[in-house]
Length: 466
Image 1: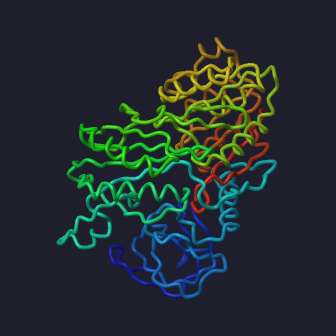
Image 2: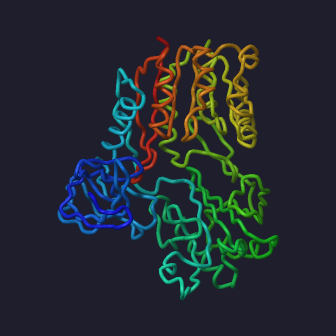
């Protein structure tokens, strides 16, 4: 590949040899790796190389010459445009195999170690309609019209952001990741907004009334609707709720948020409840949780239970154990294991999440769970450990970026007998494990597929003090 970097060109008859990170696939040509989105291992393709770097290139599919036997027909009409289900064209058994392989290779290549036991990936019972939460964005210019910037049609849209494009919204017709009623609700909200002449948000000018829509449900199929509006005027939102609430009896919580900020974040803003209690009730095993509009909760309820069960089994807690749950969120894992140990200390940066954790502990009459809000590397200190005792077990479930080096350093200093490391990013998990293997061995690891048809995978690793 000696073409100029700025000049796209076509390569014919290229074989795709493997799956890669971020939902892409890999081909090789002239000693260089080529990353291709929406390709499948085993494909023979004509590809258009659109970007070149010293050690790799990026390409798009020009033509499928010979499709892989791993391919299936994507269910969604938006496949390839939305960016959400990048593996919808792969058979589910192959999705699982590639995710399992990714976890193994990340641990070996980045973590510089291997697990004594690799448990097979736990697949998801439902390949579709598994999400309990969806967030949509309104736009006064649907993404399609951006093909002709000189003649904008200003078609109203309600859907997802195009990947990497803050002002381009794909107007959804369907999404198979949530139950069909979510599509019905979304469409009715959009139709109502159009019929009533409500302004759809202009993401560049940062003005307009209808801004965002969030839908979430519990396992009882009770729904919460949160409408985020861009103007300090509640009347149109309340009027919408009064009209739609009789059409959707499944929606038990009708809420709105006024967001006049320059960004879409609304977790710090007041939520106004028009109908309902302002929260959904959820049950996991024998635990009850209040889920508020801003609450973090696993978006795949059934797999969340399986994930938590694996973490609890790996921990194998004793009644005398002191457990620290790092990055505890709303305390769901901490409360899930609390009855199996003497004490559990949960730490989380987000104060509202800790408020939820404390409230849920009270609801479930769990008295041995203590929660702290603050920066993990500052809260997890000698004073805290002196007050609550050295942890026998640490459970950690950090964000995608993994743990701060200071947190890893403190864990190595404290030397718990076991670490149960839950991660949504096997690469950063492996990076942290590479630091921990100074004193720990990876006894076992298991991947859990929380998000079928995407490249994302959760992993649970058990590290034991050498």
